[in-house]
Each structure stands twice: as C-alpha cells, then as structure tokens.
Image (cartoon, rainbow over all chains, first blue to last red; front, side, top):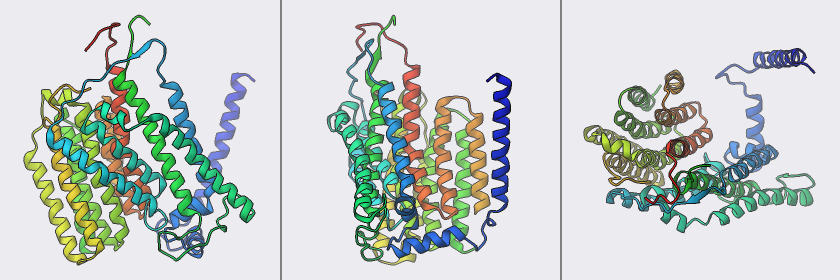
Length: 246
Length: 149
Length: 82
C-alpha cells in the first residue's frame, strides 16, 4: 500500500467517523433539558439494586466490564513504566542526603498523613453511597503516603514502602476483580453479574451486592499502582545516578 | 439563584481569576503563591456550592481538596526549594486573609447546618484547610532551608 | 455559574498551552485541575470532580516536577560523592 492509498483510507475513515459523530450529536437530548432516557434507566436499575450512588452502580454493576478494561489499562501502564524506568547497568544508586525540613512542615506532614489515609479509605468504602469510589480514594491514599517524602526525606519513605509488596498488591487486586467476576459467572450465570450477593439495606455500607467488593479491589489496585509509579519516578529523580561516558 | 450560589459564584470567580492572573505572569514566587491561594479560595467555594445545591455529600469534594491542595503546594515547595530560596515569596497578609475567609465561610455554614454529623465534617474540612494553607505558605517562604534532593 | 466556570477553564487551558517553561506549566496545570473540579461540581458531577482533584492537585505536579528534575540534573562523574 503506497502513501497515497493510505492517506485516502485515513481520509475516508475520518470523514465517516466525523459524519457519524455529527449525526449522533444532532440526536442528543438538549443540554439542561428534562428528558434523560439513559439517566432514568440507570437510576432505576441502581435503586433496584440498593445502590445509593448511581455512578458507582454504573461503574461497578451495569458497566463493570468496562471498568475491568480500565483497570487493565492502568495495570499495563504501570508495568510498562516499571520496565522502562528500571535501573540499568550503567547507573548506580546514590544515597540521598537527608533533607532539612522546617519543624511546622514536618509536624503538619506527620499529622495529616493518617488523616489523609483515613479519608482515602472513607472515600473507597462509601463509594456506593456518596461521590467517590475506588479510583478517587486510592489516589488520595497513595498521595498521602508521599507526605513522608515531602515532610521528612526519601529514606523514611523507603523504610515503610517496600515497592515489591505494592507490586504484588497491584496484581492481587486486579486478580481479585477478575475472581469476583468469575464467581458471578459460576454462581449467577454471567460474568460480573450482580445477582450473587444480597443487596442489603438501601443507603448502608454493606448495600449494593458486589459493588463494594469491586470498589475495594479497584481502590487497592489504584493505590498500589500510584505508589509503584511514584516510586519509579522518585528513584529516577532522587537516587539513580547516570555514570559519565555512556 | 439563592444567596449561597451567588456567594459561591463571587468567591470562585474572583479567586479563580486572581489565581489565573497570578499564575500566568510574574516571577516564580508570585506563581506559587497564586496556586496556593486558589486552594484556599476554591475550597470555601465548593463548600458553599454543596450548601447551595443542598447536597451534603458534595462536601466530600471540598474535604479532598482541603487535604490534597496543600500537599500539592508542598510538592512545589519541596521540589523548587532552590529556586524559591533565592527569591522567597512573602504573602503573609494574603494567606491570613484567605484563611479568614475560609474560617468565616465554615462558621456561617455550621450555623446554617446546625449541630449534627455534617457540622463535624464541615469543621474538620475547615480546620484542615486553614492549617494546611498556613503551613504550605510557610513552606513556600523557606520551609526547606537546606538544599534538598 | 456554569458560564463562569467554563470561562475560567477555557482561560486556564489556553494559558497552560501558551506558557512555555515546564515548571510554570506544572503550576498552571495544578490551577487548571482545581478549576476543572469546580466546573464538574457545578455540572452536578461530584464523582468526576473528585477524580480530577485527586489526580490534578498533587499527583500530576509531583510526576511532572520529578521528570523535570531528572532531565535537568547534570550528569556526574563516576565516584563523585556529594
């Protein structure tokens, strides 16, 4: 296939996509109108399954397979990052100097660290009740850990953060999601179908069937992924030194 | 449009515009202060929005901002320590003014909500916001004295 | 409210494109993240606002600044101790 044919192919494909998108946009309900065909059905479904937060119901129940795709993307991205940013043969580790941190900043970091971790867990646990969920809470909790780097120094962070464990945790969380889906397949007849567990009382922590479980799996996956990702970046920026003459 | 929404709009529009202007131009010390101030102003704005829409669960957004906003500023303070040490920002008045605004908003909202669990959440958010911003501002103006890596 | 938030986001995003220095860009991006979160809240999408805040306020600046620091740092000679 020569250059001209390829260009034509791209042009035809792009034009088709553009035409379809425009046609779809013309059929959309008006902005701010009171007719919400998808919204009404999604809310109805989520209420039927005792999930107070419709977004969580859409993410982890009605479209749970899409979420599986998303966490696989994050997982693959982190694996790629770990492979790219590993320590190569012509690099060595330099011991970072302890940083000099003003006392109020250090105290603030140490005081806020548990609060932020707790908030992350709270956001994950209340994913089916209030805004939030695995992703948001996981990122918040992982960011909280790095207050140790900001408020103390890198060596303190390394002491409480065995990267290997977090890598294992990342993989375990993804497989936990898959196992939940398979359990639904065996118990209920279709992959990730939310009919296996009792739905619980509406608007309590244990409501929503498998939604809290999947939420927790995603939260753990995201938290571990962010920690591993930042660990690689910090290693590169702080510890690993390239030797000259490469 | 109720009063809460109007106040939130004024706070957010003024704060956002000022922060944008500060962050887009000027020396580095002005930019970091503008970034810190936006957190201090957006958080009360979000609290007011939660009250305006009558959705207590929206307070979560403000809570996360109150936690992570100062952390973001600390990131800049830590990693730009060398540049900032040469030209430290001085924004004591602005910081305390923003903290005062945050405190005022939280007190008014607490009065509107009445004693309940929601009020405790509001107080926690307010305390985190004010302490976080004052500390972050302190960190910007010389919180990392030594050359840090 | 929606118009105000949209205008802020548009101005912020344009600034992020126009600013050239990566460090300043990181600062503008942090501001953009917060403004976007406000826009999402105004549009009644607190879940998205939370995601945006979680990622945009601390994580993205940290990653960007670490990358900038790694790129800018001069190479040192073998055995050069600090």
